[in-house]
Image 1 (cartoon, helix red, strand yellow):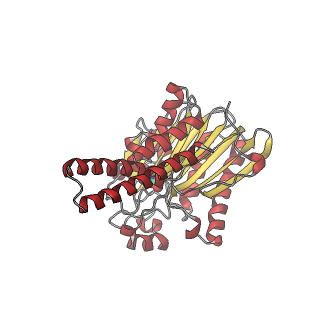
Image 2 (tube, helix red, strand yellow):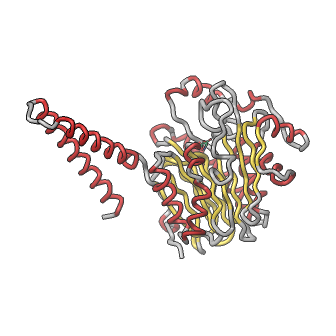
Image 3 (cartoon, helix red, strand yellow):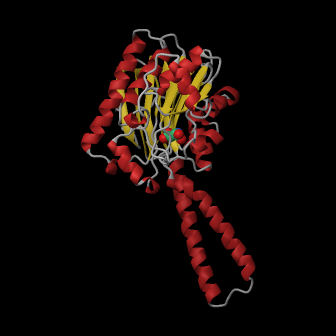
Length: 384
Ligand code: ASP
């Protein structure tokens, strides 16, 4: 039996024992059979706290898959969260699928023609930002004032140069501006009006804030207090030179406070790339990713603890993030071609393209929900 099943069985056994104990205690207290009431209350509180601490691990999914690729590779995500089959009809699933496939095809073609990995990251993020299905660029979620504020970042793993923007209201493609911050300034992060002023000195497309607002998001905004909506787009690639690149773009979280900045433009939180570690793009509840420096932690565990990409992504999402009750996931890629997608939510829009060590050459695959159904012949390949 797998470790996961044993953990779940033990947890349920503990929970049942706990509740039976509580019932017996309540009855005995009610019947006056308990003299030391204060001590029993303390015990009950301790048991309750213990059970509450176990709850997050009971409620979060553990979706994790790793692959090994030859040559250039691209992994993308379109956000993680409460993405379950029952919320989508076949037509919607097909739309998400073809949107992800289109991005993979363009990205992988560019890579095989020898394009620089950063060109591929920015081109793919731009496609995802222009697609209203995703929470980035057009189709982004609203802040608590009914406006869209966009964040994005990119990072080059060969030089560790990075660029980021936050709180944009009029830039059609934030990923392009993040790239310009890296290329054209000596800074890493520009925000709000200052970032948009900088954009005027460049060739960037400006739009009214209305452009980003889609009917679907307007309807969601009307009921945002009841909903917990995640979503973001991310790309990690290894180009023909063997260099790693990462980028992420988002509208943030529905109903976020005006001026709130999430993890996406924080280098090390939502995005990180280092040829000696991994290229990582995250999606999920940003505050947890900032506090835990998630993208950098994946790198740090590989570089300083000697963990593999597989071990590191698993520990960071199911260890660090779960213990903090943070929700979300990530895609990651190392210089040897090991790739992972890992998430503790029910689903994550995601896709990968590359050659599986001579098998399935080349493959373009997309997944949405948990428990992935990867084609058998391309199934999980262990790392060296
Ligand atoms: N991480 C993003 C943020 O908190 C949201 C997401 O990935 O869905 O801004």
